[in-house]
Amino acid sequence: MAAHFGLDIGRSFVKVVEVDGGGKGLLKAAGSWQTPGGGIQSESETELGKLSEAIRSCVEAAKIATSNCVVSLVESQVVSRLIELPVLTDKELVAAINWEAEQYIPMPIKDVNLQYKVISRPQDASGKMSVLLLAAPKRMVAKYLNVVGAAGLKAVAFETESLALARALFRPGDPATIIVSLGAASSELVVVFGGNVLFTRSIASGGMVLTKAIMAEFNLPQNQAEEYKQTYGILEDKLSAKVANVLKPTLDILAAELLKAMEYTHTHIQGSAVSRVVICGGGAFLPGLSEFLAARTSLEVSLGDPWAYFSKEGLVTKLVGQGSIYAVATGLALRSV
Image 1 (cartoon, one colour):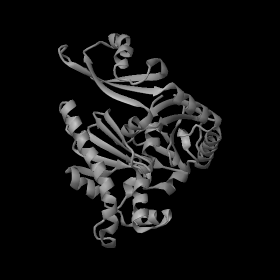
Image 2: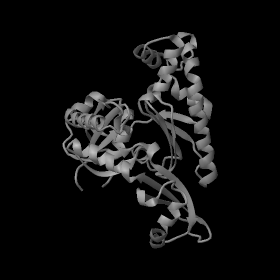
Image 3: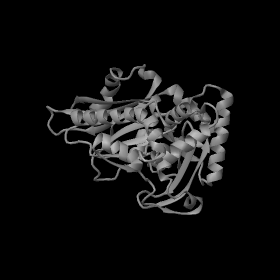
């Protein structure tokens, strides 16, 4: 198997991670670089060229040793559906999957790259099997290939953020879990059970929404509002809880989505009641967030650290404690290709 690294092209930062072996292996390299302009979602050739330059700079600065990479796809641009089908053999499923997918994918099948994974197949033929469908527009994949290629890299595989997060943060034997990745522009909810992704949801509110709320309430410039957010968070005893009161309406939306995800999982997957939440991403470090979500959902809430079981060398020793920010890139690096 050729060596590869994980490349997470985020809306705010490009992140890279290289590992040697899974589980308790070696974390060899990691780094981040600010995403220029509109990032991967831009249609401007000039901006996409700058993105390629940023990716190249990030790889060089992190001292990544290979040009092969597994690349993340923006979750909101990929169609993900958990469907139920009559019990089929693998051969029957191959023959039937395109026809079945047409009923659930809101675009022509010829225009997408379609993947599927059997989540459960009951022994009793009278039951239903669960299959996860993933459809990525070919036009979007072509854009990624161009950007990555212009950076002097070779994309050996593509994967959604949700699958990468599940691999990075879910361990064998873990109970049904909701992973919440809190980014700058959006937050991703991923329900994982038995190592499989059952449900994903992208919420169009991330760290910048919180920052802008503080800017508006206190008439502050962005950098000072960001400082308020990271210092006071939603701790009730800080700044007379004024900052917390500004942030809570947005975070209540997140908590409501967590409750919906819990209900969906309980209803659709037998024996998979969610019992914990794992948060990651830059927004996961908001002071008081774990306690707030625990109070709203009555679930155990913890900060996910995909680097907890790795030994570390080189530049990454300076990034200890930041594993949560690199969760997607770490999951990509851990993929077998």
